[in-house]
Structure formats: structure tokens, C-alpha cells
Length: 221
Image (tube, one colour):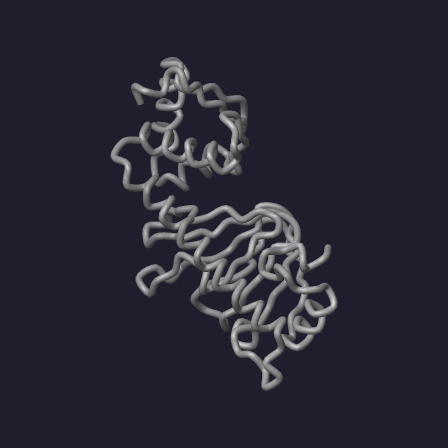
């Protein structure tokens, strides 16, 4: 994979990418499905690039229940500065959904330009700033979903966001039904009942992870 295909390295040549990554003491790591990639509160701050595979940012509560904060796909960037992290919820970590190949970068080295003040390093910091702004938008969308009062409203809000993001009324969701319930912070059985009602009401159709919104029936949602 060419690192400069990742948004973290936008407008940076492959040669400069490799030079900086060597300077940052970065390394590629391979993780198995179900393995922990990073714990956001117990380790030295890092920034990582998911070179292949999918992973989930998870938070476990004191009672053992979990919430999926975010689903990461190939080419996603993660790290403390981009995480839904606070001191009140320290048990947040990144776990592999599939086998993952990850590029780990020392965050302090990344954010502290060397004495040469290389143009590529300055550009890299600008890219990090842009990624933070994108993560802020993502957090706002998640808050919008969770602020809905009913399961139907949460489902519809999330599906609308995915429809807009994928620019189609038919779209693929990255979650299993159990994971979707954890992401929405709702009971899975109650969510499945509501999905069935939404299909019966002609609001949507679905097949496994494919969902299609039926716009002629959405006014009554």
C-alpha cells in the first residue's frame, strides 16, 4: 500500500512519507481477529493507520455492557486525539473485527516538527488538524443519533446519515444487528421488533447488511 493514499499523508510524496515514518520510529503490526490493537488510556499516545481490515472502538461500562463508539474500516486513522475519550470513561479500546494490518506512529514525534522544519512535516500536522475537524463532525452526527428519543427515530436517523454518506438510498451498513444495537445503545430484541415494524410500514427494506430507504413513505417517521 502507498501510504500517501491515506488522508493523513495527503499532498505528501511517497519518498517523504517513508522518510518521516522512519524519523517517527513507526512500525507495521499484524493483529488477529478479536485481538486488542490499542487501549486509549493506558499507553503512550499514538496515531495509527488501519492499512487493512476492520476494527471497532469499544467502551465497556462497569456492569459489563459495551457500546460501539465507532467502526473503523481500511484506511481509517485513529489515536487519542481522534478518540471519544474522557477521564470518566477510561475503558476504551480498539479491537479487531477481522485480521488487521496497522501502522503505528509515535504521536509526540509526529506533532513536534524537527529543527529542519520540513515542509512535508508541516503539511502532515495540517492533515492531522483536518482529521480532527472531520472527527468532530462524526461525533456531532453520533450525538444526533443518540439524542433521538425512540428506537425508530435512532434507526432512521442513522440510516439517513449512511444514505447521505454513501450518496444512495440503498447502502451497506458496517454492523451486524448485535453491533448496530450496541452502537445505538438500545436492546437488540427491541431494535429487531422496530425494524420489522418499519419494514411493514413501508419505510425501508433490508437484506442482511443492505438497507434501502423508501422515500415515498418516510414522511410519517
